[in-house]
Image 1: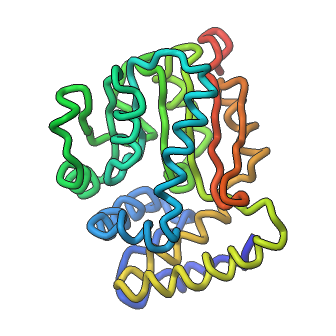
Image 2: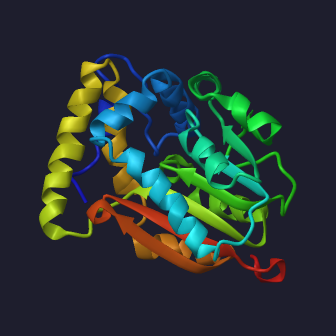
Amino acid sequence: MAGPRASTADRVAADGSPYPDRARPSFEHDVRAMFTHIAHRYDWFDHLVSFGQDFVWRPRALWALDRFRDHRPVHRVLDVGCGPGDLTVLAGRRFPSASVVGADFTAAMLARAATRHDLGRFGPRLRFAQASAMHLPFRSASFDVVMSAFVVRNLVDLGAAFRELRRVLVPGGSLLTLEITEPTSRIFRATFHTYFDRVVPWLGAAVHSAGPYRYLPESLRDLPGRASMLAMLADAGFSRTIADPLSLGAVTSYLAEAAPSHASP
């Protein structure tokens, strides 16, 4: 991974923007403040810094999910940490008979989602709700699919979050987690870190969000590697786990099947 994290004393962004630190008790609160701060620019800035690749990653991940499920019917879908709703809406299109819930713990993100998309065509089968991935306000075994995009590296306790996602899945249901990851190509890895660790924070500072986009490469360093992620999913009650790298491993789709209830931790 890239170099060492800044010390706690260095955690104040020059422009005053939120700069979460996983070592602080206020981490979850600070992450919410960060996403509130960047909500109005989150979508277009991601398109910019990913060179438009995020338009490909989400549909490709949903395609992989459909294959993983052997194209079995999907009735209820939950998008956790939905942000401005891109994956939520894509799921509504991909599974036209399913009801889809986009959940996020940041009110500003939900407001952005509600105004950014033409939701009328989905009718009552697509809705948004404010909720934390750590404490979902849904009954156990409520969803056939639970998914998230670029969320899990921001969670305060990843193992507990995976157990909570497993709880709301029906036995045999599917989890999709799309996340930034360490590139698989050694040659590409150096270029990736030069861009991700240096250029992206500079671009963030240019739009008065130095803290969030300095935190971004740090959050990748805190994320377990692919093998460790698959092991954590197994520990949380998932079986048939797969890591599917995209874009030379710059992002990875993690796919997992919820084991029968009696096999869950």
